[in-house]
Image 1: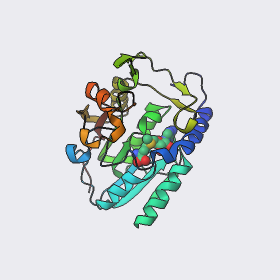
Image 2: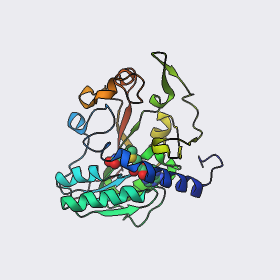
Image 3: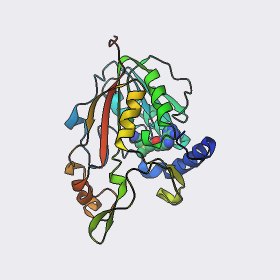
Image 4: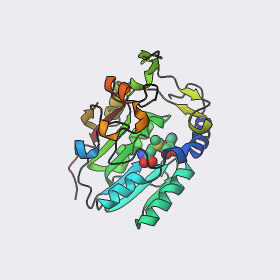
Length: 263
Ligand SMILES: C[S@@+](CC[C@H](N)C(=O)[O-])C[C@H]1O[C@@H](n2cnc3c(N)ncnc32)[C@H](O)[C@@H]1O
C-alpha cells in the first residue's frame, strides 16, 4: 500500500470532509472540454472516442459539468462517482436541471459501489485520479468497468509542476520529484484538511500498464493562454502564465483496454 501508515478510513474521512468544504470553490472549474488550468482543451486535442451513443463513466465527477458536456454531445448513458456528497449533490442538481438522467454514486474511487463491469465505452477522469490513495487498485477497477476496446482518458496536475514554487521572482524546486510519500495539508482551499499523493509520471504510466491497459497517448501540452483569467498573470499564483510557460500544468493520458471494440 502507498498510504505510509495512514489508515484508509482516516484518508477517506479527511478527504471527504475536505472536499465537502472546498467543493463550492471548484464549481464547474475543471471540466470538459477543459482538461486542466491553462492546458490544451478537447477542441485542440480531439482525444475522446465517439461520444454519441457511448456509455461513459466519470471518476471524480465533481459538480457534473463534464457529464453535462457529454450529455450535450449525445452520450447514451452518463455515470459518475465522487467521494464528496456535496459534489454529488451539485452534479445531481445540474444534470436534473439540464434534463439529463445520470447514475451517480457518492463513493471513493477505490471501491466499486455497484458499477457494471465490461460495460463502458469510455471512462474519464478530469483532475481527480491523483487523489486516490491506492492507484493500482483504482486502475484495476477502471479496467474492469471498460468494455474490451474501451478507452480511459484522464488528466491530472503535472507531477513536476507541484514541485515548483515562486521565490523572489524565480521558480525554484521546493520538493523532491522522487518523494512519493503522502502529504497532509491542514490549510488547503477554504481551510480544509486533505491528504495528497505526489507521484512521478512514470508511476502513473507503469500503473496503467500493470492494470492491463495499453497507453496510446501521453500529452504534456503547450500552455493555452486562451484560458487565462486576469489574475493568472500574477507570477505568485499557483497556476500562472509565467509558471505554465516553464512547465505544463497538466498531463493527459489516453489508454485502452485490449480487445475488439464492441458495438
Ligand atoms: C478537481 S475535482 C474534479 C473536478 C471535476 N472534473 C468537475 O468537473 O467538477 C476532484 C474531485 O475528486 C474527488 N475525489 C477526491 N478523492 C476522491 C476519492 N478517493 N474517490 C473519489 N473521488 C474523489 C473530489 O471530491 C473532487 O470532486
